[in-house]
Structures are given as structure tokens and as C-alpha cells.
Image (cartoon, rainbow, N blue to C red; front, side):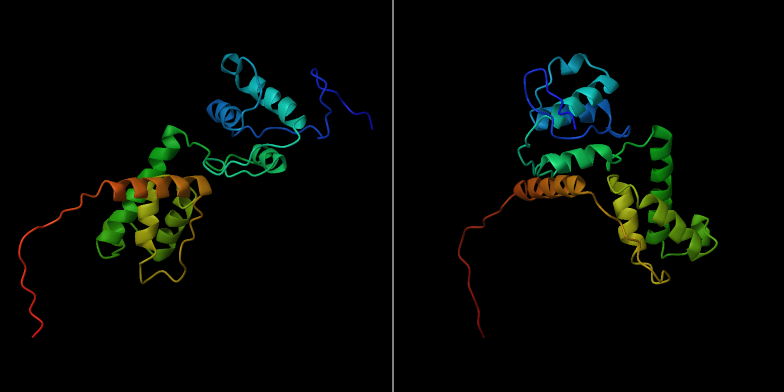
Length: 198
């Protein structure tokens, strides 16, 4: 097997791979920034040029610094695997997102109004389950998470709706929660108090 050499003399030990089309240009720029990939003029490159530059650069790296803040990737192999697969946080089109949010709103209304089918336009719980299963694929949308949480309390549903929240979304939620908790004001009352233990 012929071993390719990088222009700056590094040896290529990894076979070529393709970056999945679902990774946006913005995300590819994030990957370059987060993993400190030595790619020049990155902001001047289009999506295809960024894909090619990332593949060319990653193939010649010995390894990468583990990253546990945004992508949760620990090795070069995990980065390649991530790039080859569909983006787990693939952005919906505006039309798709509106549709998902309308369904979520409908399910929230159904749940908050006593789980009555007909007022929300449902004929049976199978329709409820189908709608909930469909939107559960988009846990990055807050109204979806709320809808699934409420629908799972419906006593008529035999099976719970499973919603897999990507690690990145979980991390963002944890951050928001900790920020909110930090901002809760602490009130201290001073004065004389009488304790009665009778």
C-alpha cells in the first residue's frame, strides 16, 4: 500500500472518508475552531471546500484533544465517525419546524385539557401516539420536550414515548438550569424569633 504524504511532511495513516451533507457550513467552522484544526482561510471557503479541508487535515493528525463541552468527542476516530454520520442536531427547514411546533402545541393543549381527544381533533389515542412519536425526533425544540413530558402522563397511552435527547442538548439544558439557580435571590430575615416546642 502506498502511503500518502501531506505537503508539510506528515504521514497519512487514515483512509479517506466523506463528511455527511447534513453538517452545515457553520458547524464545520465550529469543528475547525473547537478542535484547533490547522486550516487556513477557513472563513473564505464554501461548505464543499471546508469538507475537503477537514478530511485532508484530520487524516494526517495523530489524535485530537478530547472535547467535553460541545461535541463530546474523545479521539480522532470518534471525530471521523461523527463527521461521517448524519448531524444529530440537523436543523429543520422553517416549514418543517413550524409543523413540528404546531403538533407540539396541539399535544400540549390535549394534555392540559384533561386528555380529551375530540376537542383537539383526535379520533383515538393511536393518532396521539403517532403525533408524539413523530415530534419526539426533535428534542432540541423546547415545546417538543414539554409536549412529550405531558403526553407521557396520559393514562390512556399504553406505551411511553421515548425521546433521546442528544448529549449536546442535555449539556445546554444543564447549563441553563445552573444559570437559573445561580440567579435565584436569597432572602435573609433578621430579627427576634420565638421557637415554641410545646
